[in-house]
Length: 177
Image (cartoon, rainbow, N blue to C red; front, side, top):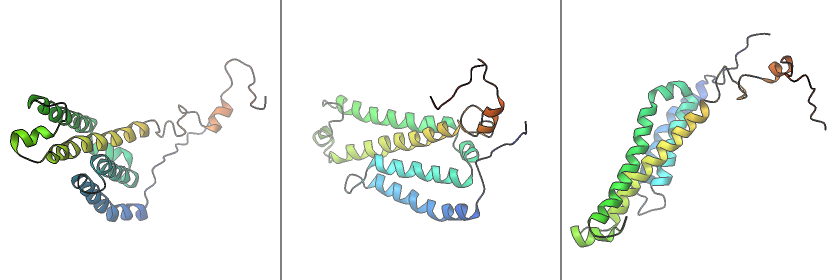
Protein backbone atom coordinates (compact mmCIF):
# COMPACT_ATOMS: atom_id res chain seq x y z
CA UNK A 1 0.00 0.00 0.00
CA UNK A 2 1.53 3.33 -1.05
CA UNK A 3 1.57 6.30 1.33
CA UNK A 4 -0.01 9.10 -0.70
CA UNK A 5 -1.30 12.20 0.98
CA UNK A 6 -3.91 14.26 -0.79
CA UNK A 7 -3.27 17.81 0.45
CA UNK A 8 -6.26 19.84 -0.67
CA UNK A 9 -4.49 23.20 -0.28
CA UNK A 10 -2.56 24.31 -3.34
CA UNK A 11 -0.90 27.71 -3.34
CA UNK A 12 -2.03 29.77 -6.30
CA UNK A 13 -0.51 33.18 -6.94
CA UNK A 14 -3.56 34.18 -8.98
CA UNK A 15 -6.00 33.41 -6.16
CA UNK A 16 -3.76 34.95 -3.48
CA UNK A 17 -3.36 38.16 -5.49
CA UNK A 18 -7.07 38.36 -6.28
CA UNK A 19 -7.98 37.89 -2.61
CA UNK A 20 -5.44 40.54 -1.55
CA UNK A 21 -7.17 42.96 -3.91
CA UNK A 22 -10.79 41.98 -3.22
CA UNK A 23 -10.74 41.35 0.56
CA UNK A 24 -10.43 45.00 1.65
CA UNK A 25 -13.40 45.92 -0.53
CA UNK A 26 -15.61 43.08 0.71
CA UNK A 27 -14.69 43.84 4.32
CA UNK A 28 -15.50 47.53 3.80
CA UNK A 29 -18.79 46.65 2.12
CA UNK A 30 -19.69 44.28 4.95
CA UNK A 31 -19.01 46.98 7.53
CA UNK A 32 -21.00 49.47 5.44
CA UNK A 33 -23.95 47.08 5.32
CA UNK A 34 -23.72 46.59 9.09
CA UNK A 35 -23.50 50.27 10.01
CA UNK A 36 -26.12 51.54 7.55
CA UNK A 37 -28.58 48.65 7.84
CA UNK A 38 -31.24 50.64 9.66
CA UNK A 39 -31.40 53.34 6.99
CA UNK A 40 -30.73 51.29 3.85
CA UNK A 41 -31.06 47.70 2.70
CA UNK A 42 -28.85 45.47 4.79
CA UNK A 43 -28.25 45.20 8.47
CA UNK A 44 -26.37 43.20 11.03
CA UNK A 45 -27.16 39.82 9.51
CA UNK A 46 -26.16 40.72 5.96
CA UNK A 47 -23.11 42.74 7.02
CA UNK A 48 -21.96 40.04 9.45
CA UNK A 49 -22.30 37.46 6.70
CA UNK A 50 -20.14 39.46 4.31
CA UNK A 51 -17.48 40.04 6.99
CA UNK A 52 -17.49 36.32 7.81
CA UNK A 53 -17.22 35.33 4.15
CA UNK A 54 -14.27 37.69 3.75
CA UNK A 55 -12.42 35.66 6.38
CA UNK A 56 -13.39 32.45 4.53
CA UNK A 57 -12.00 33.95 1.34
CA UNK A 58 -8.69 34.59 3.13
CA UNK A 59 -8.70 30.99 4.40
CA UNK A 60 -9.21 29.60 0.90
CA UNK A 61 -6.39 31.75 -0.51
CA UNK A 62 -3.78 31.46 2.24
CA UNK A 63 -4.66 28.14 3.85
CA UNK A 64 -7.21 27.08 6.42
CA UNK A 65 -4.74 26.17 9.17
CA UNK A 66 -2.86 29.50 9.15
CA UNK A 67 -6.21 31.32 9.24
CA UNK A 68 -7.43 29.06 12.05
CA UNK A 69 -4.27 29.85 14.02
CA UNK A 70 -4.78 33.57 13.37
CA UNK A 71 -8.40 33.43 14.58
CA UNK A 72 -8.25 31.14 17.58
CA UNK A 73 -11.36 29.32 18.79
CA UNK A 74 -11.36 31.38 21.99
CA UNK A 75 -11.57 34.58 19.92
CA UNK A 76 -14.46 33.25 17.83
CA UNK A 77 -16.28 31.98 20.92
CA UNK A 78 -15.75 35.39 22.51
CA UNK A 79 -17.12 37.08 19.40
CA UNK A 80 -20.33 35.05 19.42
CA UNK A 81 -20.70 35.18 23.20
CA UNK A 82 -20.08 38.93 23.23
CA UNK A 83 -22.77 39.42 20.59
CA UNK A 84 -25.27 37.37 22.60
CA UNK A 85 -24.41 39.24 25.81
CA UNK A 86 -24.79 42.64 24.11
CA UNK A 87 -28.08 41.60 22.50
CA UNK A 88 -29.42 40.35 25.83
CA UNK A 89 -28.12 43.35 27.78
CA UNK A 90 -29.85 45.80 25.45
CA UNK A 91 -33.09 43.84 25.69
CA UNK A 92 -32.88 43.61 29.47
CA UNK A 93 -32.03 47.32 29.69
CA UNK A 94 -35.37 48.07 28.04
CA UNK A 95 -37.08 45.95 30.71
CA UNK A 96 -35.18 47.88 33.40
CA UNK A 97 -36.49 51.10 31.87
CA UNK A 98 -40.05 49.85 32.33
CA UNK A 99 -40.78 48.43 28.89
CA UNK A 100 -40.78 45.03 27.27
CA UNK A 101 -37.76 43.12 25.96
CA UNK A 102 -36.26 45.18 23.08
CA UNK A 103 -38.98 47.84 23.34
CA UNK A 104 -36.92 50.74 22.07
CA UNK A 105 -39.63 53.36 22.54
CA UNK A 106 -38.55 53.52 26.17
CA UNK A 107 -35.36 55.25 24.97
CA UNK A 108 -37.42 58.18 23.71
CA UNK A 109 -39.46 58.44 26.90
CA UNK A 110 -36.53 58.11 29.33
CA UNK A 111 -33.47 59.51 27.51
CA UNK A 112 -35.19 61.60 24.79
CA UNK A 113 -33.28 59.87 21.99
CA UNK A 114 -34.64 58.18 18.89
CA UNK A 115 -35.76 54.55 19.35
CA UNK A 116 -33.81 53.65 16.19
CA UNK A 117 -30.54 53.93 18.17
CA UNK A 118 -31.55 50.91 20.23
CA UNK A 119 -32.16 48.93 17.07
CA UNK A 120 -28.85 50.12 15.62
CA UNK A 121 -27.04 48.96 18.78
CA UNK A 122 -28.63 45.51 18.55
CA UNK A 123 -27.83 45.21 14.82
CA UNK A 124 -24.25 46.49 14.99
CA UNK A 125 -23.03 45.23 18.35
CA UNK A 126 -25.15 42.10 18.69
CA UNK A 127 -26.37 40.46 15.53
CA UNK A 128 -23.37 41.22 13.30
CA UNK A 129 -20.93 39.75 15.85
CA UNK A 130 -23.06 36.63 16.31
CA UNK A 131 -23.47 36.02 12.58
CA UNK A 132 -19.86 36.62 11.54
CA UNK A 133 -18.50 34.53 14.41
CA UNK A 134 -20.94 31.70 13.70
CA UNK A 135 -20.16 31.58 9.98
CA UNK A 136 -16.41 31.48 10.58
CA UNK A 137 -16.77 28.88 13.36
CA UNK A 138 -18.98 26.64 11.22
CA UNK A 139 -16.50 26.86 8.35
CA UNK A 140 -13.57 25.88 10.59
CA UNK A 141 -15.61 23.05 12.10
CA UNK A 142 -16.49 21.65 8.69
CA UNK A 143 -12.93 22.12 7.44
CA UNK A 144 -11.59 20.15 10.43
CA UNK A 145 -13.31 17.08 9.00
CA UNK A 146 -11.02 17.09 5.96
CA UNK A 147 -7.32 16.62 6.56
CA UNK A 148 -4.49 14.92 4.69
CA UNK A 149 -5.12 11.86 6.89
CA UNK A 150 -8.77 11.79 5.76
CA UNK A 151 -8.79 13.37 2.28
CA UNK A 152 -12.15 11.98 1.26
CA UNK A 153 -13.89 12.70 4.55
CA UNK A 154 -14.51 8.97 5.01
CA UNK A 155 -12.22 8.45 7.96
CA UNK A 156 -9.08 7.88 5.93
CA UNK A 157 -10.44 5.26 3.55
CA UNK A 158 -10.21 6.47 -0.01
CA UNK A 159 -11.56 4.60 -3.01
CA UNK A 160 -8.24 2.81 -3.59
CA UNK A 161 -7.86 1.95 0.10
CA UNK A 162 -11.41 0.61 0.28
CA UNK A 163 -10.70 -1.82 -2.55
CA UNK A 164 -7.67 -3.19 -0.69
CA UNK A 165 -9.48 -3.47 2.67
CA UNK A 166 -11.33 -6.78 2.93
CA UNK A 167 -14.87 -6.82 4.25
CA UNK A 168 -14.78 -7.92 7.88
CA UNK A 169 -17.94 -10.03 7.62
CA UNK A 170 -16.68 -11.97 4.60
CA UNK A 171 -19.96 -11.24 2.74
CA UNK A 172 -19.64 -9.54 -0.59
CA UNK A 173 -21.70 -6.37 -0.81
CA UNK A 174 -23.08 -5.49 -4.22
CA UNK A 175 -24.80 -2.19 -5.06
CA UNK A 176 -26.52 -3.69 -8.10
CA UNK A 177 -29.24 -5.38 -5.99
